[in-house]
Image (tube, rainbow over all chains, first blue to last red; front, side, top):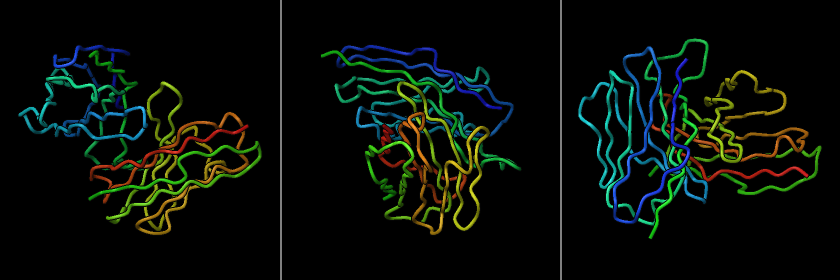
Length: 120
Length: 115
């Protein structure tokens, strides 16, 4: 079974600075998807960035970028020029791209999350 | 596009009451919908996966008779918590996707409080 680990329960960053959130995962599959979701106090889950495992190039989305190290099974999120609105819980998630016979299909497996605080 | 509406956003009711939560995809057809449960300061845990027109697939440890899921159309899935008790109090979140291998779009969640 796949697992996702976020080793940093809480992180803090100064406004306009850069912060990196860590995520590692365990899987025996070669093809899969990785995601970072943001959950602000309003509780809605917002997709921040997505990475396909078969792509070597790291995904970027404006101020958000990832460092995807497939061999190390690492998927960290870098937030540049942090803003007050970035404060939230951040969840790393894994999704298989294979059909799971006898089980759920396409479900996300989440890490425990990292609470990010942004100081003005 | 890809808006998912979840209703109600907050429910407070007495123990023994059955509560229905709706998850609607407003601008796309959702072949697959997922129901998650999130305890305070915890991650999202998948409860079940529902596919339109077929029975839901429940995760291990989730009581099928307790959490009834219906996915009768391509835009609506419902989760009914039957005879709810205080231990069922939690945050329930749905997500919808065009297919099992397509991106999931989340609703705003429902905060359920059983007194």
